[in-house]
Amino acid sequence: MTHLAWNAKEATVGELAERSGVAPSALRFYEREGLISSRRTTGNQRRYSRDTLRRVAFIRTSQRLGIPLATVRDVLALLPEDRTPTREDWARISECWRDDLDRRIRTLQRLRDNLADCIGCGCLSLDRCVLSNPGDELAAHGPGPRRLIED
Image (cartoon, rainbow, N blue to C red; front, side, top):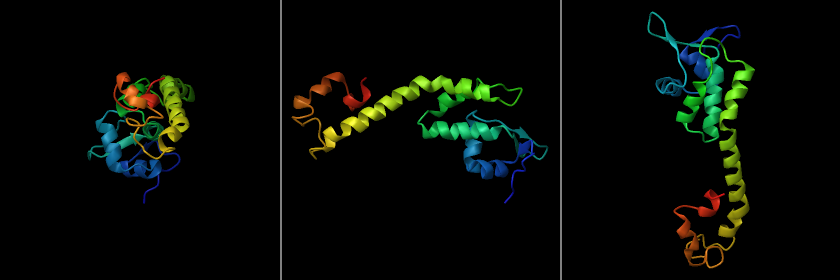
């Protein structure tokens, strides 16, 4: 195992993978998708700047939150290219999806609060349930779990 030295300015794909906990194949995928970048050595090996660690952490956290990679790429494009992003830079781009996260939180809260309505009786069939959705009235509002996706 190669460890990324605390004062290293660049990392190999193996060092970045080990330090970030992300597989080398995922790092190469992120690079192909324009989420991170590297320079190539004369031997055509990738070298990532040390601040790529923060970008990878941001990507992984965003994925865990369910944010699509295309959206992550758009937001990462707002970071400066000519210097290591500062705390203020990261705070600024994190605001980009605050509204989306708030919406997701509201949806999860509705799911938590209304899940018992479905599972409570055990039928698991809201289209036939005379208690929660008599006559499948919610079908008129569109497809999918209407109580969860409508505000």
